[in-house]
Length: 76
Ligand code: FES
Image 1 (cartoon, rainbow, N blue to C red):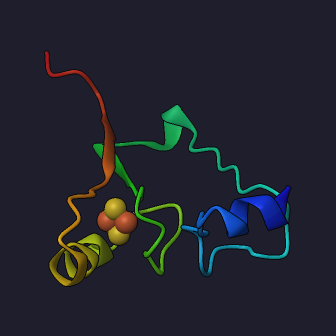
Image 2 (image 1 turned 120 degrees about the vertical axis):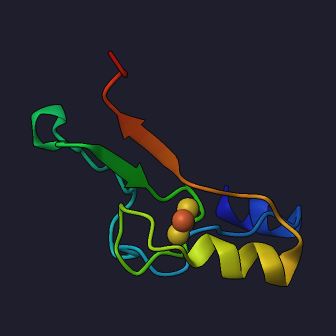
């Protein structure tokens, strides 16, 4: 349960993205990716689901090492 998780010290990583829904799921259509898509994995971006570089500030402040997932076409 949520209360058990909170008691165990588990905290939310998502502080701002669509907090009004139960689960955040996004689709990026492969056909829409021209060169690459840089997807946020730190939940700090202001341009969800895309990385805006906010992970760098988070890493500097916390000593963490998170970064984006980059989806791209295979080099030929
Ligand atoms: Fe979240 Fe870059 S802003 S991974």
